[in-house]
Amino acid sequence: MPDTIVSHDVDLVKGYMARPMEAGNYPGLVIIQEWWGLDEHIRDVTRRFAREGYVAIAPDLFHGEVTNDPQEAGKLAGSLDRARAVRDTQAAMNYIKNSEFSNGKLGVIGYCLGGGVSLLTACNDNVDAGVVYYGGLPNPLDLLDNIDAPILAVYGEDEGERANELEKELNDRGKSVQKHIYPGAGHGFFNDSGGNHNSDAAADAWTKTLDFLKSNV
Amino acid sequence: MPDTIVTEDVDLVSGYLARPIEDGTYSSIIVLQEWWGLDEHIRDVTRRFARNGFIALSPDLYHGKQTADPDEARGLSTGLDRTRATRDVISAADYVKNMNISNGSVFTIGYCMGGGISILAACKTDLTGAIVYYGGLPNPVEQLDELNAPVLAIYGSDETDRGTEVQQALLERDKDVDLHIYEGARHAFFNDSWDERYDKNASDDSWIKVMDFIEKHGP
Image (cartoon, rainbow over all chains, first blue to last red; front, side, top):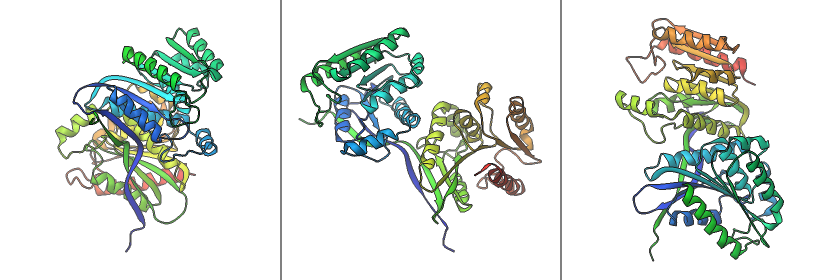
């Protein structure tokens, strides 16, 4: 009798990892994608952090979907289950913590869509540092009460208000926050594969990010 | 200049999936391993559920490790990060819920170590029902306050106290619990790959109880 079922191994949560080749213990960093998905740009950023001495993982929050069409990206981002996205991020954190290359420290960084998920993860779990590039605030805002980690907030001038709001909400709660707003830069300015790239702002933000991570992880 | 880094695609959480071939929509069941790991027995149980019309998925809570050695199994079980395991279960629930053959119902069932995780997961996420075979209470037990799903609890008579304790803890909190204790059966009696512990009568009867429980609480 032929079987009535199919069975196979499945990947429930996937990611892209980059780490220093040399054996040793390194701080961990979870990199959270923009609304395009886990694309070549995010992989490139993951490799850049590995070259700076991090065990870096970008979880695939869209579970296989990648696009360069803004309309489709908007749909994917709009329908993203935030709770699942945080769990996927936590899965990456757990993976790093259990890696033989980890030194036990963990940071989380996200861009655009991923910036919001980065903050949300810092509200839901213990991380040593949280970095948000032009991301949204958690809903409800009181989730911020749970943040323990210092936060670095990086925004373009077009979202100065959002940055100020985030800073205020964190300050009001006695949280540690460092904010940078780049004049003339817009949403997505760090993405050197995108139309909004601003190389001066991106280079300065990169330095600030590395400094911030270095002093916290 | 040669690069100083290594890169690879990685499985952050993986599992074993079995489902009916035929098109349709099905209830899901997350099958949670004993302390041996995601071994051939658990894969077999996962397939059995699929043959009974379920999307059945067993997440690998040990992330690649499994053993047939009791000492090693105890070490793995003791070392298991319960928070991570619970998240892995919820990741499995996320996965099945997003399949186009899912009808939205998701049960968990766990044996031995996985029994405890089955209850714990039901405290941390919304499930249609949670089934525990000879598993322990969450620690701290107050986590049960958050549980919404009905629970089916199945034990051998060697663990009557444990089964009764689980029942009591749930009843005290006005939770829906159904307890069955099988006289003469022992811990792991459902595991038909373990001759010394397997109890066919208890096993067969408990399977019927499981199917009844799922039918009662399913869609």
